[in-house]
Length: 207
Image (tube, rainbow, N blue to C red; front, side):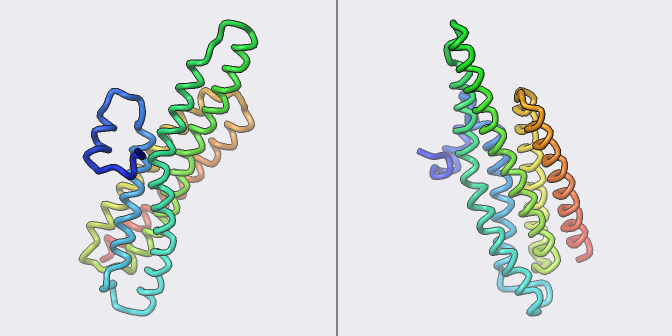
């Protein structure tokens, strides 16, 4: 059964088991998925900051973005575990002959890229949700400001956790062009997410 389709209790049990998956990558995706869900809740409240049409239009647009983002982040919880399991499987391949060593090396490199793709996508999605958080913070009902604050904190945590997983796998990839491109995107996403989070927090502080 997939992680996302089980109960919260089952998911926590899976995280606490001695199995390598689910691990930090799945936890990062979960954190960001919960953050996006909280923002969706606040954006959908019947009361907005001022009750204006501007508020409702901005929040409606945020809901559209956040709903799709949350679905993709939820899917990444399982996808990350699957991707890492493939890395483990690749490392277990036979390496007795030169041919086996070559096959194993190729499989490892392919699997590592898969294990990078998922958390990198989590970073993209987390940054996108943080962009939407600015609108929710500015136009959402002030009574739900703590929910927005928690959502922003979770999204920042999810993005940071996803970056840790990208970085550790990227260090083992033997393709300078690929690693440079991924590293550049990671830095860009980290900067954009920080800017968006700070803007959302400033909107909350402004009341």
